[in-house]
Length: 519
Image (cartoon, rainbow, N blue to C red):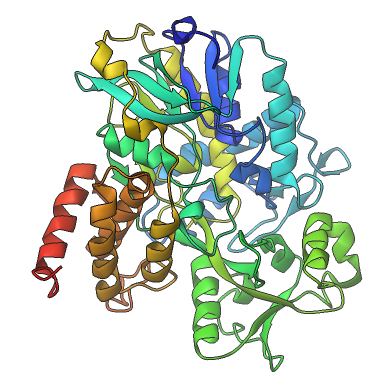
């Protein structure tokens, strides 16, 4: 942050340093590019925590069409089939490109060692070091970024506001580790900020994943899509630790089963049983917990004695929590894990605001629909990063002029966001099962936070838009389950929402509540 921001004028700016951000920066490196990382490069990203791998049709008995069939089935009618086919056809080459960049995948002879995960009809999950795929990806890509002179990495720097002039991006306001602010004049910004797990009490994501990219985009006027679809991973380790440790779906892929305190395998009735789509397994566990049972993942027989060899990272997590997976059933429960919604983008990653792109979990490409198929997310990020970079490169670089008032930081730009109020509200209202009463109460509580000037306004704004989207979808579909609308509508329709529309809907809801006049 000691450099004058004019040094970076007209350079594309990538916000976020997980797989999506690192790959986008590397793909853009034919010209100078700026990469913003709120933590030391490679730290505190959801990618780095990913135990699962990349889903791609790399096996001789697999094809992109078969992969697409599984993706469509899991997505509960909301997958954009055209976008999904393009991404899945490109996924095998994306895995090979990662390997060329230094990612050391697990091998079986000359080919990739492929795992099986829920709702996949083939073994197609490429892993690294068993269950440390994300860590290996971040290691290799961060090293590649450091080797690339064209990429300027600004560590400890957070994006706080996009400057929009005449309806297009003209710059970005950033804050450094010591609270100093600067504005980079640029007409090209890529948001690769990850997910929203930090907005939930029970999550497997880093606490710093707070929907920052969604807030930046919404305030800049971008449309957001499918925000109501929040995926809860069925098997987070049920301890007091937060964020929660994840027990990868790959463990069930290798034969582990779900039982209750009586030893009953209570989900055997589901098609696919423990390997049914994530939304079905998560709801089944949640309902069993609500009924007063305990739920355990039993890996004693499969993988059994080979658990530590196959899943060394998960084995360490479990042992640190006091459990030996080869000898003891593991207490588990659902926890927020992934967001299928995000900034609405086209096939090149372009948002509805000229000069603004999104990639990775912050974007909604249409691949995941209402329920993400396991391990499709890392593949999506790797594929789409290259497409976003191509689009950015073909866009004129000259930034628009803006005045001193536009570049001056607002007081809110310099404050650290307070997520605790939003976290409590969302965890209560937007869990595995939702209903109108809970969603309306959440909206009424979030509205004053989202429209205020306190540090809580950014997270609350994202939470408000999630709650409004969930209230608007009066059906149950995929990961969005409404107790008061348990059936799915005959036709699946993606949702689109702007900040202005969300605020108007929230005000209408608040005024309609019985306590509105006395509040």
